[in-house]
Image 1 (cartoon, rainbow, N blue to C red):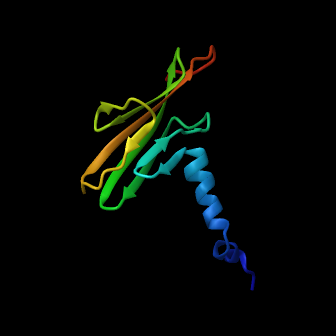
Image 2 (image 1 turned 180 degrees about the vertical axis):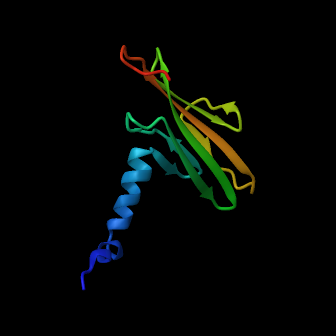
Length: 112
C-alpha cells in the first residue's frame, strides 16, 4: 500500500542534502576547508548545526545581526577568521564556530 518512502531510495536524499546543507546553509567542503556562505531565511535569527569531519566535531551557530555593513564574520573558538573559510583539522577536539550574518538594518526591523 503506497510507496511514499520510495523516493528516498533514489537520488532524492542526496539532492535534499545539497539543497539544505550546501545551498541554504552554505556549508561547502573544499578539500580540507569548509566554506560558510549561508542564505538564511529572513525569519531565521539563529540556526545550529553539528558538523563532523573525521574525529573532530564542529558546533556551528549561525546568527543574524543587523548592521550598517552587510558581511559574514566567522569565528572559530573565539578567533575571527580572515574570510568565510575554516580549516578542518583532524585533532579530535570539539570546536565552536560562530558564523555571524550581518544584514542591513531596515526602518521597520524589530530589534527585540
